[in-house]
Length: 240
Image (cartoon, rainbow, N blue to C red; front, side, top):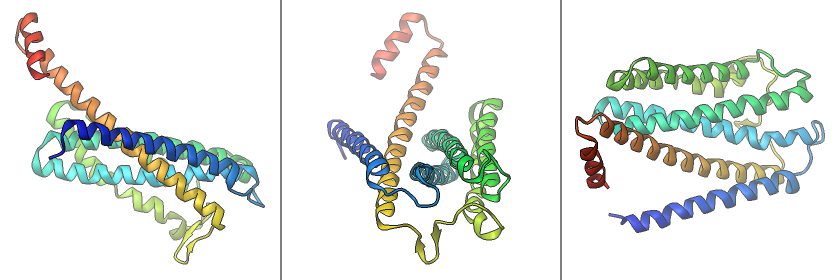
């Protein structure tokens, strides 16, 4: 069993490596990676766009697993984890759509086109917006169970997004193919560093959001305790 002090030190190390990886990522994106011959400087958006997309897929896979565990075990900690991961995943998917539009404008001469990859990604975004709307509409365990079902079903769209450029005719570039990643060595190194940086920040954000959700639930419980005001402060001290 890891002590509280060791957990604190370990978590500070994760924060440090996350910040260091992000700084290294920014350096390689703007100073190390070569300029792409066809698209020019705008291609550097790629190093933000792809890692956010991959990390968003990971976030929704975590929602999928945590939702299944919550429905089986009825333990609220899995619902808290699913909710935290869904929030981070929705943020990352929003960044995917924004960076994709920034990349598309100079390359395709349009901010948006109903390309299969873009359309299925937008559907994924709407699914997880609906996830939070469902949680708000039905409170308590009912809302958590309904959201868990949607989190499980909604994950079906993730492999559809990934395979869309292989199943349908699309103008979206194919970077990862069965033969490997179609990038020059310096570009591949930059992408790998960026992916590690976003994965570490994903871990940081999910963990911090999970802690906030747990604390908010405890405060709500204390608020609704049928105790006098002085009794509530005593209960709070005992919990601490």
